[in-house]
Amino acid sequence: MAINMKISVAMATYNGEKYLIEQLDSIRKQTRQVDEVIIHDDCSTDNTVSMVREYIRSYGLDQNWKIVPNEKNLGYAGNFMASVKDTTGEYIFFCDQDDIWLEDRVERMVSVMEVNDKIMMLGSEFEPFSCDKDAPQISEKVLKSFVGDGSLEHFVIKPSTVFIGSEGCTMCVRREFFNETLAFWVEGWAHDEYVWKLALCMDGCYVLHAKTLLRRMHAGNVSKRKMRDLSKRIKFFEELLVSHKQTLAFAEHKGLDKKVLTLLQRNIRATELRIELMAERKLLNIVPLVFRYIDCYHSRKSIPVELMMAVKGRG
Image 1 (cartoon, rainbow, N blue to C red):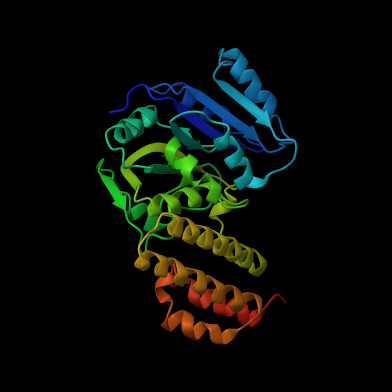
Image 2: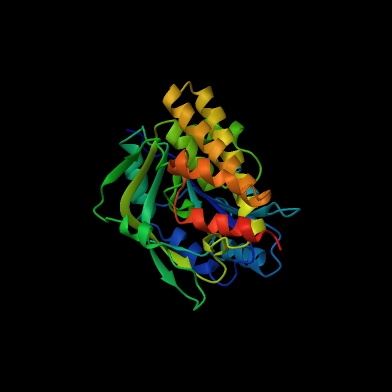
């Protein structure tokens, strides 16, 4: 069993002054203290940086907490990965700027990882709460997957798990996993999807069925908005295509069996067909998508939505 392993927190900020102090307080007051908090700020135009600096100074955290203002805007994925790369701990917690950690989050999750060295990535459940009338909602499917019994679920790679099944803000990863997979990360690939997929490839993807944080839902949660805009949807699938290809490359690197490689190849082809359907209005692509690649859809509700978007086109 590993003991006294260094624990890091990686946070990405951008114009987060409204809710940030509550999150910082919840990290500072953990029952099991973290060893470092690394924050990268993506060129905020509000008081985020000065607020964090004053927080660090006022609590005497200068030795273990730091905020690094980016010289240029890196975007959400790049900013988060910059923060993770700057950490030094054996356990790395991903942290959004606007949530609130339950006081035993670190203690509970690290304790689970200490007794199971097969866990490369550990996610958890959360409790959503809204603070804006315009806040998006967590899907009923996700909420129904929360059992809250403290059990540990092991996810293996199959059609239904290729798509991310845990919120990035709940995740903790091992340093050895991050070091081994970093060469396969590409710019723009969301940190949580990258970790989920490559942890699947290493048979180390787990979720703890216990709430460890309060997930703040507000009007700024753009990642929760439905993609009804054609250009945004196409861009999403272009990025998804890259992530599928990188996952395949890592799976080949790890020497995974042909069944897994075929699964990933099928998802690549299905994503290519979906892009062609929407971007080039290749309406006949719907035939193979429905009859050959139906298992490559995260939700079948997307089929009529994308077909209608293709018919209407950009105009």
